[in-house]
Amino acid sequence: MTNKLKEYFPLLREREELLAEIKGSRELYAMYEEWSRAQREEFLDFCTGVRGMKILYDSFFKEVMNPEYAPERLESFLCAVLKRKVKILRVLPNDSTRISDEGSLLITDIVVGHEDGALANVEIQKIGYGFPGERSACYSADMLLRQYRRVRSRQGDDFSYRDIKNVYLIVIYENSPKEFKDFPEVYHHHARQVFDSGLQINLLQEFVMIPLDIFHAQMHNKPIETPLEAWLTFLGEDKPEKVIELIAAYPKFKEMYATLYEMCRNTERVMRMFSEELRILDRNTVKYMIEEQQKEIDSYKEQLQQKDEELDRKETELYAAQERLAQLEAELAAARSKASK
Image (cartoon, rainbow, N blue to C red):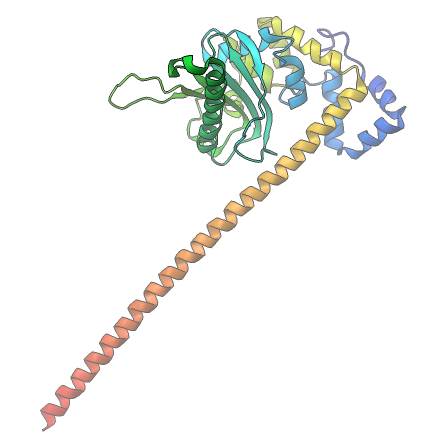
């Protein structure tokens, strides 16, 4: 297959060179042999530039978007998504009292603090959750509570609730939940809490949800024209033609791709990263399938219960009808007996 990206990234290696290195190491070749045929081809394709990088893999995303040594990249991304100026001052740990066991389908989760004190949680998922609204509300509440505790601890008696800033939860779905399919022309959903009366009170929590699958459908045969379109193309597109179009329209992305292709020259490191991504994806896919099967089982149980209740109701009605019929027959027999006398 033609390597269209080699012209733009000369550091890319040839397939034969990469395979020779892998086969020359017993450990690397054993790792390579554990992958499926499709996984081997995927690895060789993105390492040699036959296809673009899988930016949505957690390890690769954090490599190129790490706010600790390249904050301007995440700032630019957040500016495009939030449609407001963003200046990252610190990166916050994202452990805390997370709402669930979170061996989740989430592949990237970064919490950053803005210049004005607001927080943003950037989360990317391979597979959409069954209840994105409920889960997002819980995460946002967790972020807000963490900020409250931090600010109150820092300011002590001088604490004021006006010191608490907005929290933004940004969720990017590679494969979006079914709720998003009802809006096939929208790939940027922004929500904040408002009153139906028009009362203006800031309730601090805002949400942005981006379904990349719907974005790609909308961008079919359409040029990249905005910073948001550029970023979403970078995150979710691996066709060489689109990568070339992106770096031609927005040259800053060429440096980001170069960062990842430089990483690919360390074969052992990138193979271990890829193996970890596959392991997480397998685990999460199994978890997702179990959850989906459990929902299907619960649905069948509910349907069976409804049928049982319906059967009980009909049996009760039949019993009442039989009693009424027996009563009518008794009354008829009594009437006939009386008439024969």
